[in-house]
Image 1 (cartoon, protein in one colour):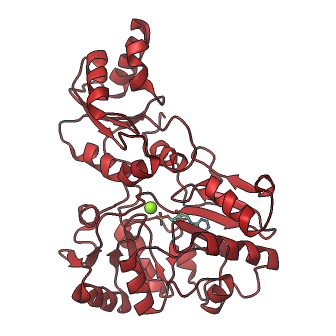
Image 2 (image 1 turned 90 degrees about the vertical axis):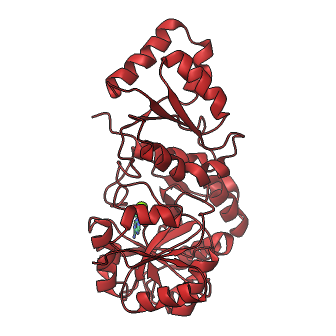
Image 3 (image 1 turned 180 degrees about the horizontal axis):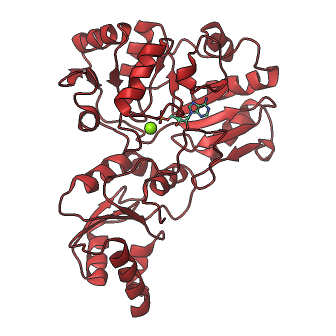
Amino acid sequence: MTLKTEKLFSDAYGIDRAIALLKSGQLVAIPTETVYGLAALALDANAAAEIFAAKERPAFDPLIVHVPRAWHSCAELIEADIFSPNKIGPHQQLVIDSLIRAFWPGPLTIVAPKSDKIPDIVTSGLGTVGVRMPDHPVAQVVLQRLGQPLAAPSANRFGRISPTTADHVIAELDGRIPAVLDGGRCDVGVESTIVAVESNGSLTVLRPGGVSVEALRAALAYELKSNADAIQIQTIAAGHVNSIQAPGMLENHYAPRKPMLLIAAGTSARLSKMDAANIEGIKNALRRFCPDALKVGYLVTSGSPAVHKRGLESALGLPVHVESLSPKGDMIEAARNLFAAMRKLDDEETLSCIIAEPCPNETGLAFAINDRLKRAATPSS
Ligand code: AMP
Ligand code: MG
């Protein structure tokens, strides 16, 4: 394996080098608008196998296939040997085309029957493949110049926090991959929403992500000229994983090394109104979870870090480092900052553990943020 991972700028040299490495079957981490992806040629089973080795990813967790801008319809994806030429019915095709028109390029992965050309290792032996067209200029230049699809899961060690900068990729995979192409900070910050399009055209959200369920419903209603309430969307959120449908959606994922406790939404804001018994209850829970804590990390999705810090320190009687994902409460900004904030709390040596408050409601991107927080939290066992 490589000794040191090369950090390439997204200039002419860097992009040429990345393409040359990929063409020779090697791995390159590339920027996308969701998180950094660890890319390899999707039609090359040996190259795809390298991804599993570098990430220490179990073989049952399928990879998402990324495609160039030109493949902007179900017919083109069939033509390009991504989707099956004979296992996709007309209604399924109509829905796939609607989703492509509404959300590609962008953070939506579409799962449908695969072509025989996609190696089994990429889909973990499933008959379906997850496909996405990333909306990042660097990812698109690489894909267009290659003219072939790239398999690219998040560029982190399996189960760990996803990377949203090239430095995060280095922190996760230095020496395990030849290169990372630096394209700056990821704009969306959480992974794509994954939807399976069933043969009757109904949708199952296998993973919440950068496209909200509300946006899916509204766009499909518009495209199919239907009433929004008539659009069937089933969701599988954290805690309700169907192991057959979504083999890779493990309950414990995106995890910091430090123990992370998920606490009720709005706890910090309510402290000043709580009576002594309630506050004692929270302190006891913290002592049980993190017995010798001298200082704790506290992640909130909104509000001023200074105000949270003051209230928490006086209630808990302990120094607290607060990370607020969006002081003004914008969930798009919160999603963008989520993984970097988790990583910062994890890397801060003085903190013994992390306490995290989810978003109080689960509309829009808050659904994806809460999904990640639930999976990142230490299981209560
Ligand atoms: P990531 O590491 O963020 O790229 O995760 C990829 C995830 O996509 C996997 O963990 C699966 O949950 C999901 N996925 C990919 N392909 C399929 C598929 N064919 N069927 C169901 N889920 C899939
Ligand atoms: Mg991942």
